[in-house]
Image (cartoon, rainbow, N blue to C red; front, side, top):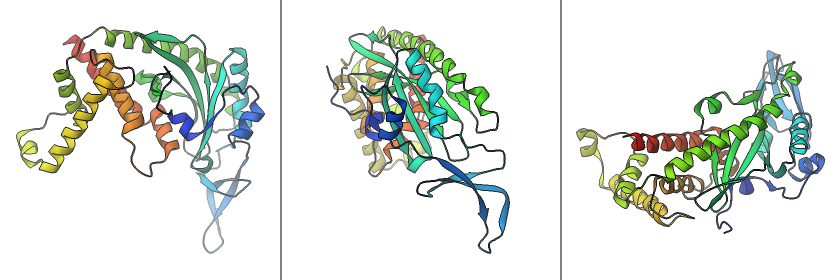
Length: 314
């Protein structure tokens, strides 16, 4: 079954299906620009010591600030090692894009060895993020895409999410490019761990009433309200909470590919809600995509997985 839900990477970037040339990838995704490091001046024209602006050479858009040790690594130089591993591993390019005018850039590739849980097909992907904001490391992440609903199931291993596989913008950045190969290797390990977790959730039954109870805890961030907090709840907040719980239970029962029977259905319901239904107006899709890889969204999914596993133990 083909998903009726559009993936975040497709909304945030360019579909690269069938592309196998890095130069074409960079051109199609508008990643073929250079970055420059220039002195910062005060309003009186004096140079600010040890601080620099990072900006695009083509349109002079300011991407961030940095110190003297920060070394510019242009997109092509950073994506070339990624490309070599894509070719070596017979991976295929999936998508690429620019976030916030170039403060962050990304390219994703799909690996082989797809796997299934129940009747759901999952595709393994690895993605490289290149930052030019002066603060973050260029990083590699792995994630799994549930095909039927285009949910992003990022690596849920807490330690790997915390540390990432990153390359700092320092004069010795080239020494770290071997991390590209390491990223592909670890993506397979993470995918196997993810599959084991999903199979475990599929083996545990969950009723509709249990799903509603879990949904309420999810929206309360898994915190129990004391008597004072319950008393201070307004009718509006109670109604809002009930509506959200009802929506999540509906996804548990009737979301894309769900059957409303197990913990696996609840995990899928949460990911579908976060990826496709909790979108606020005027929300930047690119930033949501990054958040699903390394920010708040992936933390919520990891927390849900942990809570569901705790219920199994209990």
